[in-house]
Amino acid sequence: GDTKYTAVTGTLPLRRAICDDLKRRKGLEFDESCIILGNGAKQSVYQGILATCGVGDVVVIPAPYWPSYPEMATLVGAKSCILQTKPKDGYLITPEALRDVLSNEPNAKLLILCNPSNPTGGVHTKDQLQDIANVLLEFPHVTVLADEIYERLVYDDCNHVSFATLLPHRTITINGFSKAYSMTGMRLGYLAAPTMQLAKAVTTIQSQLTSCAGSVSQAGGLAALTQVTDKEMEGIATTMQQKRDYVLERLSKMDGVLVDVPPNGAFYVMPDVSTYITTDYDDTELCLELLKTKKLALVPGSSFGAPGTVRISYATSMEELDTAMTKFQQFLTEKQKQQ
Image (cartoon, rainbow, N blue to C red; front, side, top):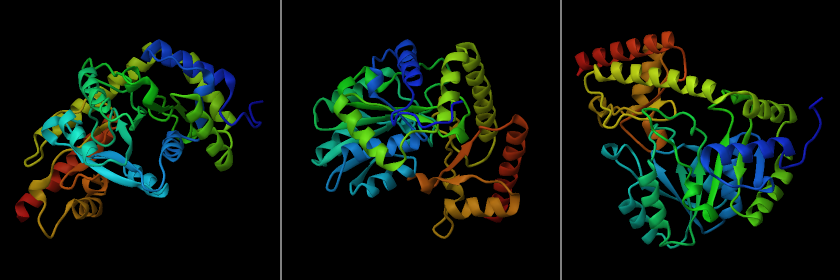
């Protein structure tokens, strides 16, 4: 019977379940009126940007980045300022780099913090997040959009910390059901607003765009939060860690492929393949040739603001990963012989 329109913000039972989950697992206190369910976390991210930024504002986006972030900033009339990170730092934000960017961008209005990261799989520790929060105290006009869609997929005894625990009144928290619960096609995400004013703004925007998230998807989200146990979720994370370890092991045996800092979150690895790149042959051409000759699809790092790398997703079966890594190794071996 869950086939009717719901409130724009979502059903009350689901919003309450989200509040309970955020309090129990993340130590965050939200009233259900500050939770807005959207048609996927992507919509929630866009509405968060739309509610905080406009023409002339600057959105700070660490690279490597999810390609939608800069495009969303452009759609609202804002400018993207790319904060470059380094492989030796695991592609994580350093306080020095953040302070430098914010000092030179007086119109900065929003910092997007994807943690764990798509595309790198990097996870900021609590101390690293605290360093970021300390810098932001020097720039009180900057809001943080914390995209935490991968927060249940962390490895190596890494504990994910929600940024809103450190800067609660200035952090928009984004999460959803696509990654941890594998509910990608259900298109269900949410925004947890730090203030009622922002929650109302986001609700007004969504009411004119899509109205409510799908009622059937919301029923599925409620079932996920109330019926799937922590033990089951931990089992999923353990399985994903095994897949990550397998991919890293295979990559370590490939000449000219470098992973400076092993990722400990999400389901991505972003190795450096610049050994195989020339002025006439970039990472996009490498991926196209790989697709054409080996029927293997990887994403070029230049799509994420990280030229000379490729993104590998290990969200598939071990059998598929074995086939993929074998094809990738064969391809690179053949490329070496051609050089």
